[in-house]
Length: 229
Image 1 (cartoon, one colour):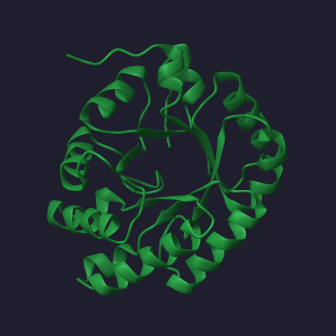
Image 2 (tube, rainbow, N blue to C red):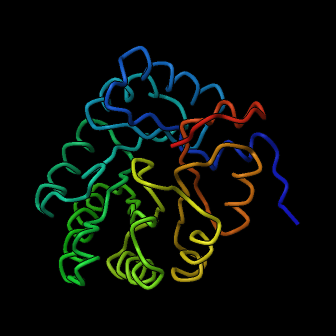
């Protein structure tokens, strides 16, 4: 049976997201206003928008997450670590980084580990949490398991399904597999294609502890959205 949550409880699972490259200052301001109104867990934006959001969210309970290595994950570990440090300096309180998917597909697990560990070290030095986007639509189940194991090994706080900028997003099966792999104590974030309250509840039931979506307001209002981060 699907779990039941109050609207207030549901809101605390949602990372209200705007990562489109054309996102404007007024659109980012609206994102923050909506996040405050519904008391979402966090917003998720690109690093260039952090300073604006930090001012607008000051004094609220809404966390501010910045992307790192987004959306391809193909930058160097040192670059991702530096990007993390700059994002935190600008006001980010959470980091959503993209794993080096190409390294995982090539079997270069040492580089995958180095990549994630560099960001975790930089973020944890400031007590900032890290969510690692493994881009499940590009991985086999075995690769998903290996990616999650590495994330857990190096101390990441969350594993996350998707950027929302690839061929597919979160699935219940992937969330369940990720939860099974990392165990009960690590965060699992479902992102990409989560469009309805029913979608959110299904992801939570499968083991998700955060939901990334650009449709948080519509979800709270019970309306279906046409597309979702």
